[in-house]
Image 1 (cartoon, rainbow, N blue to C red):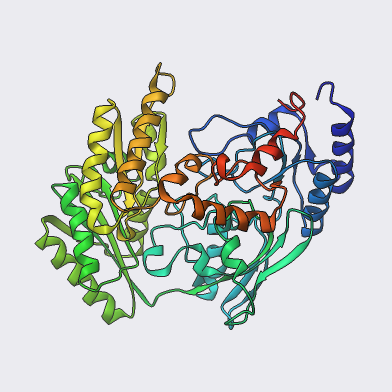
Image 2 (image 1 turned 90 degrees about the horizontal axis):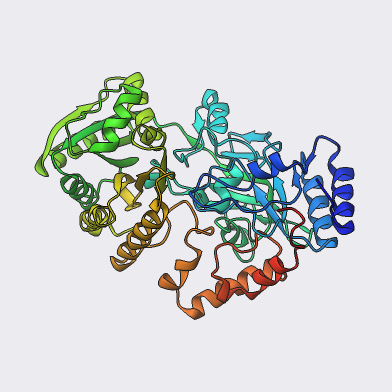
Length: 483
Protein backbone atom coordinates (compact mmCIF):
# COMPACT_ATOMS: atom_id res chain seq x y z
CA UNK A 1 0.00 0.00 0.00
CA UNK A 2 3.03 2.26 0.32
CA UNK A 3 3.37 5.25 2.58
CA UNK A 4 -0.18 6.21 3.47
CA UNK A 5 -0.89 9.32 5.60
CA UNK A 6 -2.20 8.68 9.09
CA UNK A 7 -5.87 9.56 8.38
CA UNK A 8 -6.04 6.81 5.77
CA UNK A 9 -4.28 4.34 8.00
CA UNK A 10 -6.97 5.07 10.57
CA UNK A 11 -9.74 4.68 7.97
CA UNK A 12 -8.39 1.34 6.77
CA UNK A 13 -8.05 0.12 10.33
CA UNK A 14 -11.62 1.09 11.15
CA UNK A 15 -13.02 -0.50 7.99
CA UNK A 16 -11.13 -3.71 8.68
CA UNK A 17 -12.58 -3.87 12.16
CA UNK A 18 -16.07 -3.55 10.64
CA UNK A 19 -15.68 -6.01 7.78
CA UNK A 20 -13.14 -8.51 9.00
CA UNK A 21 -9.96 -9.56 7.20
CA UNK A 22 -11.75 -10.89 4.10
CA UNK A 23 -14.14 -7.97 3.75
CA UNK A 24 -11.68 -5.21 2.85
CA UNK A 25 -9.18 -4.93 0.02
CA UNK A 26 -6.67 -2.12 -0.39
CA UNK A 27 -4.25 -3.79 -2.82
CA UNK A 28 -3.68 -2.13 -6.18
CA UNK A 29 -5.06 -5.09 -8.18
CA UNK A 30 -8.47 -5.01 -6.49
CA UNK A 31 -8.66 -1.23 -6.69
CA UNK A 32 -7.82 -1.40 -10.39
CA UNK A 33 -10.63 -3.91 -10.97
CA UNK A 34 -13.27 -1.64 -9.45
CA UNK A 35 -11.87 1.52 -11.03
CA UNK A 36 -13.89 1.06 -14.20
CA UNK A 37 -17.11 -0.43 -15.49
CA UNK A 38 -18.12 -1.84 -18.90
CA UNK A 39 -18.03 1.59 -20.58
CA UNK A 40 -15.27 2.94 -22.81
CA UNK A 41 -14.17 5.50 -20.26
CA UNK A 42 -10.74 5.48 -18.68
CA UNK A 43 -10.60 4.05 -15.20
CA UNK A 44 -11.10 6.24 -12.17
CA UNK A 45 -9.31 6.06 -8.81
CA UNK A 46 -10.55 3.80 -6.05
CA UNK A 47 -9.86 4.01 -2.36
CA UNK A 48 -10.47 1.05 -0.02
CA UNK A 49 -12.80 -1.59 -1.47
CA UNK A 50 -15.39 -2.90 0.99
CA UNK A 51 -17.38 -6.13 0.68
CA UNK A 52 -20.15 -5.91 3.28
CA UNK A 53 -22.44 -8.85 3.97
CA UNK A 54 -25.23 -7.03 5.79
CA UNK A 55 -27.08 -3.74 6.01
CA UNK A 56 -25.48 -3.15 9.41
CA UNK A 57 -22.02 -3.40 7.85
CA UNK A 58 -23.00 -1.03 5.03
CA UNK A 59 -24.19 1.49 7.60
CA UNK A 60 -21.01 1.13 9.64
CA UNK A 61 -18.87 1.64 6.52
CA UNK A 62 -20.79 4.78 5.56
CA UNK A 63 -20.47 6.20 9.08
CA UNK A 64 -16.73 5.50 9.03
CA UNK A 65 -16.41 7.29 5.70
CA UNK A 66 -18.31 10.27 7.11
CA UNK A 67 -16.00 10.45 10.13
CA UNK A 68 -12.97 10.45 7.85
CA UNK A 69 -14.39 12.91 5.33
CA UNK A 70 -14.46 10.42 2.47
CA UNK A 71 -16.95 9.95 -0.32
CA UNK A 72 -18.64 6.59 -0.92
CA UNK A 73 -19.45 4.85 -4.21
CA UNK A 74 -21.78 1.81 -4.28
CA UNK A 75 -21.03 -0.86 -6.87
CA UNK A 76 -22.77 -3.95 -8.18
CA UNK A 77 -21.48 -6.21 -10.94
CA UNK A 78 -19.77 -3.41 -12.86
CA UNK A 79 -21.76 -4.05 -16.05
CA UNK A 80 -22.82 -0.39 -16.35
CA UNK A 81 -22.16 1.38 -19.64
CA UNK A 82 -22.21 5.04 -18.61
CA UNK A 83 -19.40 5.21 -16.05
CA UNK A 84 -21.85 5.37 -13.17
CA UNK A 85 -19.84 3.02 -10.94
CA UNK A 86 -16.44 4.46 -11.86
CA UNK A 87 -14.98 5.91 -8.62
CA UNK A 88 -13.83 9.52 -8.90
CA UNK A 89 -11.44 11.03 -6.37
CA UNK A 90 -10.45 7.78 -4.60
CA UNK A 91 -13.66 7.23 -2.60
CA UNK A 92 -14.51 4.28 -0.42
CA UNK A 93 -16.04 1.71 -2.79
CA UNK A 94 -18.87 -0.39 -1.36
CA UNK A 95 -19.11 -3.56 -3.48
CA UNK A 96 -22.46 -5.20 -2.75
CA UNK A 97 -21.94 -8.50 -4.57
CA UNK A 98 -21.76 -10.53 -1.32
CA UNK A 99 -25.20 -9.30 -0.28
CA UNK A 100 -26.85 -11.73 -2.68
CA UNK A 101 -29.64 -13.41 -0.75
CA UNK A 102 -33.24 -13.77 -1.85
CA UNK A 103 -34.78 -13.05 1.53
CA UNK A 104 -38.47 -13.80 1.05
CA UNK A 105 -40.94 -14.61 -1.69
CA UNK A 106 -44.66 -14.02 -1.13
CA UNK A 107 -46.50 -15.47 -4.11
CA UNK A 108 -49.87 -14.34 -2.77
CA UNK A 109 -48.76 -10.72 -2.55
CA UNK A 110 -46.56 -11.12 -5.67
CA UNK A 111 -43.57 -9.63 -3.85
CA UNK A 112 -40.00 -10.75 -3.30
CA UNK A 113 -37.54 -9.14 -0.87
CA UNK A 114 -33.97 -9.35 -2.13
CA UNK A 115 -30.55 -7.99 -1.29
CA UNK A 116 -28.92 -5.67 -3.85
CA UNK A 117 -26.29 -8.19 -4.97
CA UNK A 118 -28.83 -10.72 -6.28
CA UNK A 119 -28.17 -11.32 -9.98
CA UNK A 120 -31.17 -10.42 -12.13
CA UNK A 121 -31.47 -13.77 -13.89
CA UNK A 122 -30.90 -15.70 -10.65
CA UNK A 123 -34.08 -14.17 -9.26
CA UNK A 124 -36.09 -15.31 -12.27
CA UNK A 125 -34.56 -18.80 -12.04
CA UNK A 126 -35.54 -18.94 -8.36
CA UNK A 127 -39.11 -17.91 -9.22
CA UNK A 128 -39.56 -20.18 -12.24
CA UNK A 129 -40.83 -23.25 -10.31
CA UNK A 130 -43.44 -20.97 -8.74
CA UNK A 131 -44.69 -19.76 -12.13
CA UNK A 132 -43.30 -16.23 -11.79
CA UNK A 133 -40.40 -14.12 -13.07
CA UNK A 134 -38.80 -10.69 -12.63
CA UNK A 135 -39.91 -8.72 -15.68
CA UNK A 136 -37.03 -6.24 -16.27
CA UNK A 137 -34.55 -8.20 -18.39
CA UNK A 138 -31.44 -6.20 -19.41
CA UNK A 139 -29.19 -7.85 -21.96
CA UNK A 140 -26.67 -8.24 -19.13
CA UNK A 141 -29.19 -10.05 -16.93
CA UNK A 142 -26.90 -13.05 -16.50
CA UNK A 143 -24.47 -10.78 -14.61
CA UNK A 144 -26.12 -7.51 -13.58
CA UNK A 145 -27.57 -7.17 -10.09
CA UNK A 146 -30.94 -5.98 -8.82
CA UNK A 147 -29.20 -3.16 -6.95
CA UNK A 148 -27.62 -1.99 -10.20
CA UNK A 149 -30.98 -2.27 -11.96
CA UNK A 150 -32.49 -0.03 -9.29
CA UNK A 151 -29.63 2.46 -9.53
CA UNK A 152 -30.01 2.88 -13.29
CA UNK A 153 -33.74 2.17 -13.62
CA UNK A 154 -32.75 -0.53 -16.09
CA UNK A 155 -34.94 -1.76 -18.89
CA UNK A 156 -34.66 -4.62 -21.34
CA UNK A 157 -36.45 -6.08 -24.36
CA UNK A 158 -39.61 -7.03 -22.47
CA UNK A 159 -40.05 -3.65 -20.82
CA UNK A 160 -42.11 -2.46 -23.79
CA UNK A 161 -45.17 -4.12 -22.26
CA UNK A 162 -44.08 -4.52 -18.66
CA UNK A 163 -42.22 -1.29 -17.90
CA UNK A 164 -38.72 -0.56 -16.65
CA UNK A 165 -37.39 -1.30 -13.17
CA UNK A 166 -39.24 1.47 -11.35
CA UNK A 167 -42.54 -0.21 -12.24
CA UNK A 168 -41.38 -3.31 -10.36
CA UNK A 169 -39.89 -1.81 -7.20
CA UNK A 170 -42.26 -1.36 -4.27
CA UNK A 171 -39.87 -0.44 -1.47
CA UNK A 172 -36.17 0.10 -0.89
CA UNK A 173 -34.31 0.01 2.41
CA UNK A 174 -31.55 2.60 2.06
CA UNK A 175 -28.48 3.64 4.00
CA UNK A 176 -28.49 7.38 3.46
CA UNK A 177 -25.23 9.30 2.92
CA UNK A 178 -25.14 10.37 6.60
CA UNK A 179 -25.46 6.75 7.77
CA UNK A 180 -29.12 6.86 8.71
CA UNK A 181 -31.39 4.04 7.50
CA UNK A 182 -34.71 4.72 5.79
CA UNK A 183 -37.41 2.65 4.12
CA UNK A 184 -38.57 4.35 0.94
CA UNK A 185 -41.94 3.26 -0.38
CA UNK A 186 -43.85 0.32 1.03
CA UNK A 187 -46.09 -2.62 0.25
CA UNK A 188 -49.33 -0.66 0.64
CA UNK A 189 -51.07 0.10 -2.66
CA UNK A 190 -50.76 3.82 -1.92
CA UNK A 191 -47.89 4.49 0.52
CA UNK A 192 -48.32 7.66 2.56
CA UNK A 193 -46.28 10.73 1.69
CA UNK A 194 -43.98 11.68 -1.16
CA UNK A 195 -42.79 9.02 -3.59
CA UNK A 196 -39.19 8.95 -2.36
CA UNK A 197 -38.92 5.41 -3.71
CA UNK A 198 -39.52 6.83 -7.18
CA UNK A 199 -36.85 9.47 -6.61
CA UNK A 200 -34.33 6.87 -5.45
CA UNK A 201 -34.80 4.46 -8.38
CA UNK A 202 -32.58 5.78 -11.14
CA UNK A 203 -30.55 7.89 -8.72
CA UNK A 204 -27.33 6.09 -9.75
CA UNK A 205 -26.04 5.82 -6.20
CA UNK A 206 -26.12 9.57 -5.60
CA UNK A 207 -28.91 9.36 -2.99
CA UNK A 208 -27.68 6.47 -0.85
CA UNK A 209 -27.09 2.71 -0.91
CA UNK A 210 -29.88 0.16 -1.26
CA UNK A 211 -29.55 -2.72 1.19
CA UNK A 212 -32.92 -4.46 0.82
CA UNK A 213 -35.39 -4.22 -2.06
CA UNK A 214 -39.02 -5.31 -2.41
CA UNK A 215 -39.71 -6.14 -6.05
CA UNK A 216 -42.91 -7.00 -7.80
CA UNK A 217 -42.89 -10.51 -9.31
CA UNK A 218 -44.82 -11.20 -12.50
CA UNK A 219 -46.82 -14.35 -13.34
CA UNK A 220 -45.48 -16.25 -16.32
CA UNK A 221 -47.74 -15.81 -19.37
CA UNK A 222 -50.05 -18.63 -20.39
CA UNK A 223 -48.82 -18.51 -23.98
CA UNK A 224 -45.98 -16.89 -25.91
CA UNK A 225 -45.43 -16.44 -29.63
CA UNK A 226 -42.10 -15.23 -31.02
CA UNK A 227 -41.70 -13.98 -34.60
CA UNK A 228 -38.65 -13.14 -36.67
CA UNK A 229 -39.28 -10.81 -39.60
CA UNK A 230 -36.60 -10.06 -42.22
CA UNK A 231 -36.40 -6.84 -44.24
CA UNK A 232 -34.41 -5.46 -47.15
CA UNK A 233 -33.87 -2.17 -45.31
CA UNK A 234 -33.48 -1.02 -41.73
CA UNK A 235 -35.95 1.78 -42.47
CA UNK A 236 -38.66 -0.76 -43.35
CA UNK A 237 -38.07 -2.57 -40.06
CA UNK A 238 -38.28 0.69 -38.10
CA UNK A 239 -41.46 1.76 -39.88
CA UNK A 240 -43.03 -1.63 -39.17
CA UNK A 241 -42.48 -1.02 -35.45
CA UNK A 242 -44.36 2.28 -35.61
CA UNK A 243 -47.17 0.67 -37.57
CA UNK A 244 -47.55 -2.16 -35.03
CA UNK A 245 -47.93 0.30 -32.14
CA UNK A 246 -50.23 2.55 -34.20
CA UNK A 247 -52.48 -0.46 -34.77
CA UNK A 248 -53.05 -0.66 -31.03
CA UNK A 249 -50.88 -3.73 -30.50
CA UNK A 250 -48.54 -3.69 -27.51
CA UNK A 251 -46.25 -6.70 -27.86
CA UNK A 252 -44.07 -7.94 -25.05
CA UNK A 253 -41.02 -7.02 -27.14
CA UNK A 254 -40.03 -5.45 -30.45
CA UNK A 255 -36.29 -5.65 -31.15
CA UNK A 256 -34.39 -4.69 -34.32
CA UNK A 257 -30.90 -5.74 -35.43
CA UNK A 258 -29.18 -4.63 -38.63
CA UNK A 259 -27.28 -6.87 -41.04
CA UNK A 260 -23.77 -6.58 -39.67
CA UNK A 261 -24.73 -7.43 -36.09
CA UNK A 262 -27.13 -10.17 -37.27
CA UNK A 263 -24.26 -11.82 -39.15
CA UNK A 264 -22.10 -11.75 -36.00
CA UNK A 265 -24.93 -13.09 -33.84
CA UNK A 266 -25.67 -15.94 -36.21
CA UNK A 267 -22.03 -17.00 -36.31
CA UNK A 268 -22.20 -17.23 -32.52
CA UNK A 269 -25.59 -18.83 -31.75
CA UNK A 270 -26.52 -20.60 -35.01
CA UNK A 271 -30.20 -19.87 -34.40
CA UNK A 272 -31.13 -19.48 -38.07
CA UNK A 273 -31.02 -15.69 -38.26
CA UNK A 274 -31.12 -14.64 -41.95
CA UNK A 275 -27.69 -13.15 -42.69
CA UNK A 276 -28.76 -11.76 -46.07
CA UNK A 277 -31.40 -9.45 -44.56
CA UNK A 278 -30.63 -5.76 -44.11
CA UNK A 279 -32.46 -5.91 -40.79
CA UNK A 280 -34.46 -8.32 -38.66
CA UNK A 281 -37.31 -7.59 -36.28
CA UNK A 282 -37.75 -9.91 -33.30
CA UNK A 283 -41.31 -9.56 -32.04
CA UNK A 284 -42.93 -11.35 -29.14
CA UNK A 285 -46.51 -11.43 -27.91
CA UNK A 286 -47.71 -13.11 -24.74
CA UNK A 287 -50.92 -13.59 -22.82
CA UNK A 288 -53.96 -15.81 -23.34
CA UNK A 289 -53.52 -18.41 -26.11
CA UNK A 290 -56.22 -16.97 -28.36
CA UNK A 291 -54.98 -13.40 -28.01
CA UNK A 292 -51.40 -14.45 -28.68
CA UNK A 293 -52.29 -16.15 -31.95
CA UNK A 294 -54.29 -13.18 -33.17
CA UNK A 295 -51.59 -10.70 -32.17
CA UNK A 296 -48.88 -12.68 -33.94
CA UNK A 297 -50.94 -12.84 -37.14
CA UNK A 298 -51.57 -9.10 -37.09
CA UNK A 299 -47.86 -8.33 -36.59
CA UNK A 300 -46.97 -10.66 -39.46
CA UNK A 301 -49.50 -8.96 -41.74
CA UNK A 302 -48.26 -5.48 -40.81
CA UNK A 303 -44.68 -6.59 -41.40
CA UNK A 304 -45.48 -7.92 -44.87
CA UNK A 305 -47.33 -4.70 -45.71
CA UNK A 306 -44.17 -2.78 -44.82
CA UNK A 307 -41.76 -4.85 -46.85
CA UNK A 308 -40.97 -7.93 -44.77
CA UNK A 309 -39.48 -10.50 -47.13
CA UNK A 310 -39.97 -13.37 -44.69
CA UNK A 311 -41.82 -14.07 -41.46
CA UNK A 312 -40.82 -16.95 -39.22
CA UNK A 313 -42.62 -18.09 -36.08
CA UNK A 314 -40.63 -19.99 -33.46
CA UNK A 315 -41.94 -23.56 -33.43
CA UNK A 316 -41.22 -24.28 -29.77
CA UNK A 317 -39.53 -23.04 -26.60
CA UNK A 318 -36.14 -24.30 -27.77
CA UNK A 319 -36.26 -22.26 -30.96
CA UNK A 320 -37.61 -19.26 -29.08
CA UNK A 321 -34.76 -19.49 -26.54
CA UNK A 322 -32.19 -19.66 -29.36
CA UNK A 323 -33.58 -16.51 -30.99
CA UNK A 324 -33.47 -14.65 -27.68
CA UNK A 325 -29.98 -15.92 -26.93
CA UNK A 326 -28.91 -14.24 -30.14
CA UNK A 327 -30.46 -10.93 -29.15
CA UNK A 328 -29.20 -11.05 -25.56
CA UNK A 329 -25.61 -11.83 -26.63
CA UNK A 330 -25.49 -9.31 -29.47
CA UNK A 331 -23.12 -6.94 -27.70
CA UNK A 332 -20.65 -9.71 -27.03
CA UNK A 333 -20.90 -10.89 -30.63
CA UNK A 334 -19.41 -7.63 -31.93
CA UNK A 335 -16.00 -8.89 -30.76
CA UNK A 336 -15.99 -10.78 -34.07
CA UNK A 337 -15.91 -7.39 -35.82
CA UNK A 338 -13.52 -5.46 -33.55
CA UNK A 339 -12.31 -5.75 -29.94
CA UNK A 340 -13.96 -2.58 -28.59
CA UNK A 341 -17.28 -0.80 -28.88
CA UNK A 342 -18.95 2.38 -27.66
CA UNK A 343 -22.63 1.70 -27.01
CA UNK A 344 -25.15 4.53 -26.92
CA UNK A 345 -28.52 4.60 -25.20
CA UNK A 346 -30.55 7.54 -26.46
CA UNK A 347 -34.31 7.44 -26.93
CA UNK A 348 -36.18 8.94 -29.87
CA UNK A 349 -39.89 9.15 -30.69
CA UNK A 350 -41.00 6.10 -32.65
CA UNK A 351 -42.01 8.24 -35.62
CA UNK A 352 -38.40 9.50 -35.82
CA UNK A 353 -36.74 6.07 -35.63
CA UNK A 354 -36.06 5.67 -39.35
CA UNK A 355 -34.81 9.23 -39.75
CA UNK A 356 -32.42 9.05 -36.78
CA UNK A 357 -31.13 5.63 -37.83
CA UNK A 358 -30.20 7.03 -41.22
CA UNK A 359 -28.42 9.90 -39.49
CA UNK A 360 -26.51 7.47 -37.24
CA UNK A 361 -25.18 5.65 -40.30
CA UNK A 362 -24.20 8.98 -41.87
CA UNK A 363 -22.40 10.12 -38.71
CA UNK A 364 -20.37 6.92 -38.57
CA UNK A 365 -19.44 7.27 -42.23
CA UNK A 366 -18.28 10.87 -41.74
CA UNK A 367 -15.94 9.72 -38.99
CA UNK A 368 -14.80 6.63 -40.90
CA UNK A 369 -16.22 4.29 -38.27
CA UNK A 370 -18.14 1.03 -38.30
CA UNK A 371 -21.55 1.19 -36.62
CA UNK A 372 -23.99 -1.63 -35.93
CA UNK A 373 -27.50 -1.13 -34.64
CA UNK A 374 -29.44 -3.30 -32.22
CA UNK A 375 -32.19 -1.62 -30.24
CA UNK A 376 -35.43 -1.72 -28.29
CA UNK A 377 -37.47 -0.52 -31.24
CA UNK A 378 -40.83 -0.61 -29.49
CA UNK A 379 -39.99 2.25 -27.14
CA UNK A 380 -37.49 4.03 -29.41
CA UNK A 381 -34.47 3.14 -27.28
CA UNK A 382 -31.52 3.17 -29.69
CA UNK A 383 -28.35 1.17 -29.09
CA UNK A 384 -25.93 2.06 -31.89
CA UNK A 385 -22.54 0.44 -31.30
CA UNK A 386 -19.49 2.20 -32.69
CA UNK A 387 -17.13 -0.74 -33.18
CA UNK A 388 -13.37 -0.09 -33.16
CA UNK A 389 -9.90 -1.11 -32.03
CA UNK A 390 -8.69 1.11 -29.20
CA UNK A 391 -5.07 0.47 -30.23
CA UNK A 392 -5.54 2.43 -33.46
CA UNK A 393 -3.92 5.90 -33.08
CA UNK A 394 -6.49 8.70 -32.81
CA UNK A 395 -9.47 6.35 -32.86
CA UNK A 396 -10.93 7.42 -29.50
CA UNK A 397 -11.18 11.04 -30.61
CA UNK A 398 -13.21 9.98 -33.65
CA UNK A 399 -15.37 7.62 -31.61
CA UNK A 400 -16.21 10.22 -28.98
CA UNK A 401 -16.87 12.89 -31.61
CA UNK A 402 -19.27 10.56 -33.43
CA UNK A 403 -20.92 9.67 -30.14
CA UNK A 404 -21.50 13.33 -29.39
CA UNK A 405 -23.17 13.80 -32.77
CA UNK A 406 -25.42 10.78 -32.17
CA UNK A 407 -26.58 12.31 -28.88
CA UNK A 408 -27.23 15.66 -30.56
CA UNK A 409 -29.18 14.05 -33.41
CA UNK A 410 -31.35 12.13 -30.95
CA UNK A 411 -32.13 15.21 -28.88
CA UNK A 412 -32.85 17.24 -32.02
CA UNK A 413 -35.48 14.65 -32.96
CA UNK A 414 -37.22 15.20 -29.62
CA UNK A 415 -35.50 12.36 -27.82
CA UNK A 416 -33.90 11.80 -24.42
CA UNK A 417 -30.35 11.16 -23.22
CA UNK A 418 -30.89 7.70 -21.78
CA UNK A 419 -33.44 4.94 -21.84
CA UNK A 420 -31.87 2.53 -19.35
CA UNK A 421 -28.10 2.89 -19.01
CA UNK A 422 -28.16 6.04 -16.91
CA UNK A 423 -26.23 9.31 -17.15
CA UNK A 424 -23.11 8.52 -15.08
CA UNK A 425 -20.12 10.44 -16.40
CA UNK A 426 -20.86 9.58 -20.04
CA UNK A 427 -23.80 11.92 -20.49
CA UNK A 428 -23.28 14.19 -17.48
CA UNK A 429 -22.04 17.11 -19.55
CA UNK A 430 -24.89 16.69 -22.06
CA UNK A 431 -27.51 17.32 -19.38
CA UNK A 432 -27.80 21.08 -20.22
CA UNK A 433 -28.80 20.11 -23.76
CA UNK A 434 -31.93 18.45 -22.38
CA UNK A 435 -32.60 20.41 -19.18
CA UNK A 436 -32.64 24.14 -18.50
CA UNK A 437 -30.89 25.82 -15.55
CA UNK A 438 -34.02 25.69 -13.38
CA UNK A 439 -34.50 21.98 -14.10
CA UNK A 440 -30.90 21.21 -13.17
CA UNK A 441 -31.13 23.38 -10.07
CA UNK A 442 -34.17 21.48 -8.82
CA UNK A 443 -32.49 18.14 -9.52
CA UNK A 444 -29.49 19.33 -7.52
CA UNK A 445 -31.76 20.44 -4.67
CA UNK A 446 -33.33 16.99 -4.58
CA UNK A 447 -29.93 15.38 -4.47
CA UNK A 448 -28.72 17.65 -1.69
CA UNK A 449 -31.86 16.93 0.33
CA UNK A 450 -30.57 13.33 0.52
CA UNK A 451 -26.87 14.21 0.54
CA UNK A 452 -26.02 17.79 1.57
CA UNK A 453 -22.25 17.19 1.32
CA UNK A 454 -22.38 15.22 -1.96
CA UNK A 455 -20.48 12.30 -0.49
CA UNK A 456 -22.57 9.72 -2.40
CA UNK A 457 -21.04 8.87 -5.79
CA UNK A 458 -19.73 12.40 -6.40
CA UNK A 459 -19.18 13.69 -9.91
CA UNK A 460 -22.03 11.74 -11.48
CA UNK A 461 -25.25 12.66 -13.29
CA UNK A 462 -25.33 16.42 -12.72
CA UNK A 463 -22.89 18.64 -14.64
CA UNK A 464 -20.26 20.21 -12.44
CA UNK A 465 -21.53 23.75 -12.92
CA UNK A 466 -24.83 22.76 -11.33
CA UNK A 467 -23.38 20.77 -8.44
CA UNK A 468 -20.58 22.71 -6.74
CA UNK A 469 -20.71 20.34 -3.80
CA UNK A 470 -19.42 17.60 -6.10
CA UNK A 471 -16.22 19.56 -6.64
CA UNK A 472 -15.86 20.15 -2.92
CA UNK A 473 -16.33 16.44 -2.20
CA UNK A 474 -13.63 15.50 -4.69
CA UNK A 475 -11.25 18.18 -3.48
CA UNK A 476 -11.49 16.90 0.10
CA UNK A 477 -9.76 13.66 -0.90
CA UNK A 478 -5.97 13.64 -0.21
CA UNK A 479 -4.17 13.56 -3.54
CA UNK A 480 -1.65 10.85 -4.30
CA UNK A 481 -2.82 8.55 -1.54
CA UNK A 482 -4.63 5.95 -3.60
CA UNK A 483 -3.51 6.78 -7.15
